[in-house]
Length: 73
Image 1 (spheres, rainbow, N blue to C red):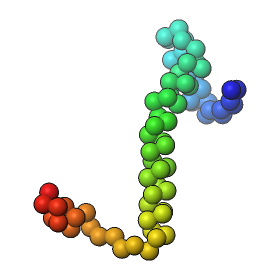
Image 2: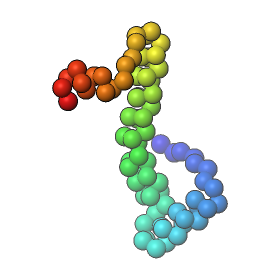
Image 3: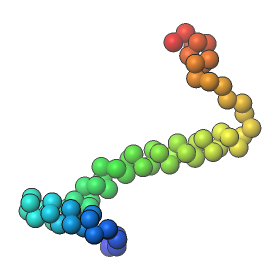
Image 4: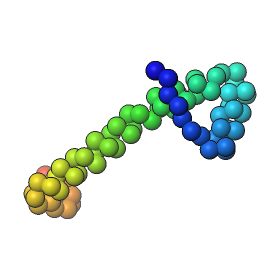
């Protein structure tokens, strides 16, 4: 799937330099960056959604320390 990405001049220069230094393509490094961070981004936005859902539910929250004390942790 073709995808267009706009980079800042600094980002482009860094990517060009890395590709030239290593003999790999810029596409290779863009794919590597996406692969390295996609799980992290999915988890972050999933967690944000969970928090929004919790807040919208009207349920009361409490400090984690109370939960740890209750569980004996």
